[in-house]
Length: 379
Image (cartoon, rainbow, N blue to C red; front, side, top):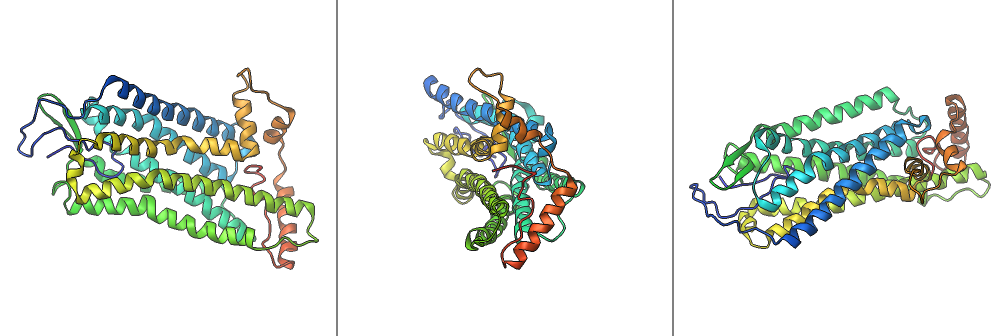
């Protein structure tokens, strides 16, 4: 069997001349000049560095400040943890494999490498979907009960449990094959690559970790957007109410940017493997290594954009990043930054405010505001 990869196994699909009967050539057709390797190494190192530092900082901002420990922010923590895990345990190893088409890391890590990406991506995108549903409930049905902290943690646990189950077949069938001059890491399906098992699994994975959650987010954010932007703010509405509506709009804009970025980054990768399933000889084209490295970099880069988006579009996260990097000579933490993260209203006051403003909005035939993520993030 030739070196192959299934969606999200993130092992290289390049082939350097090995035949089906086990014969092989002694020349690696995908060897690159040193300057090209250096450029790719720099690009991938940037992804890993920004992703790990950024997402770990996001986790710290939320967990270290009581004001940030909200239901929706727990999903953001889960999203950040998934992205950091992907960058740490997947990007570098598969970059090395893609460069040399030689697996140096043994059978155990081959199985792990085909297991962790699916779980991480599944957790990431369903955390985004959970945030979208949470925003939908808060804005479209503001008077209904919201998720509690305990229920949110249970939902996150279920997301990971389903992710583990989805990734298990690919981990189970992972194996290494040793040739005279290289080792390959592959998913050895019972009926070979391109057979019924592999194609069914590939289609299921693409639907479950890409198409279905994106469809859910498209529907929910479309309805939320229609409510927030399609309804006029009553002229007699208080300044507090108008500020809440503006804050909701900014939060929804931020999450739409996050989801759109994810969708764009992963689309070429899924297309690449769909085409490879029906036309396997594309993996043997001389240019395919550069195409794969570019597509793989784009997919992996999705792990580093969210912290940048949070920092650019959200005041509280921006204050949190200033506090985290206050040791840098050009970073100054103001008193306002401290207030953004430390000031905390009581639950009773927040609940009362939300109920009162909800009644006003119902009377005006517009959406009732709730805390507008005011305990999540200030936009």
